[in-house]
Image 1 (cartoon, helix red, strand yellow):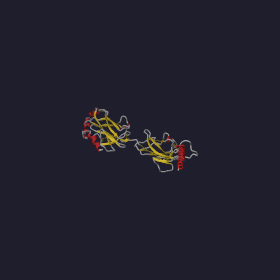
Image 2: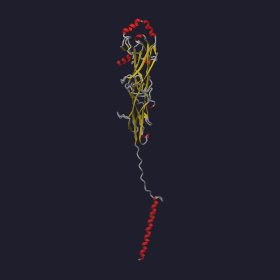
Image 3: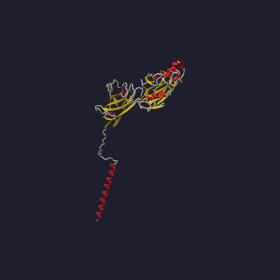
Image 4: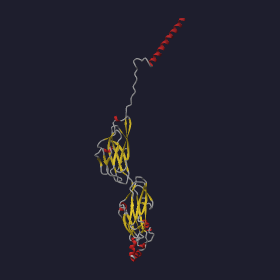
Length: 386
């Protein structure tokens, strides 16, 4: 506050007269003063910005800010006429524009002026650099204050809450008249808003309580319980939140098993089976709120599975109104054991065939008989010679 007061009154360049002197000037020539008030007055205005959360210094150009931080915007104006001139700035008006579109670079524009100011309107701008492209600024209702001199002859200021129309109205807010050589300031606050969703997809085999996992195993024909956890991790309310599920092929939903858990419902049975067909609406959720949707699915039977391991990847989906889709995946492995084929034992045929290995065997047998007969003939001839 002290810094702001010094900045406001430094802009007057210490030209204030004492209360007695100013009163005397008004008393001497009220007609002249009334005439002076109708004349144009020299008017100045400067726009500043600061990161209130990070406690940065005031800047005339830009400031950096991140998720949930608060920035302050200050429009300081000054009736730049001499204190004894009697030139009053009539109906000083200030307008501050807080952008609402998302983007890393946010430009806040301002205007300030009076009915008889010269120039008639002074434009200003400052930038707020955000660290995310989906972040944006949101004016904090009730944060607008007006800091101004206590009286025409005082060097002290007071702070007054003013209408949100200084931001929300197209034409801003009329603050009143500003005496010569006096200054005032309008300060408003805006918060960095970031939409955010946390989603977790898990499953467990029915009957295996408290064994939730995003990577587990099941048997053919088992029933699985799927759970999709949603949490609003942003700092804005998320409305008409939809939760859905993309079942893998051959997995089937068990009808009438979709349950909702949140701060109000403790396992409410939802009167719909659309969890796997477009999703179900689970309501509105403030920042930090959490909800769970649980439902059952049937694992394919043995006859529907191929031999070996089949991996089922199940994708959960969350989409708040006006936002994109958020995904998370759970994996279930299902093994089908198949009996290997046993090779048959060959049988010996009752009669050898005329071809193949049997025929070769016959040729060797015939050759052996012929050789033995020849040996006997040779032996008998040797004996006869004796």
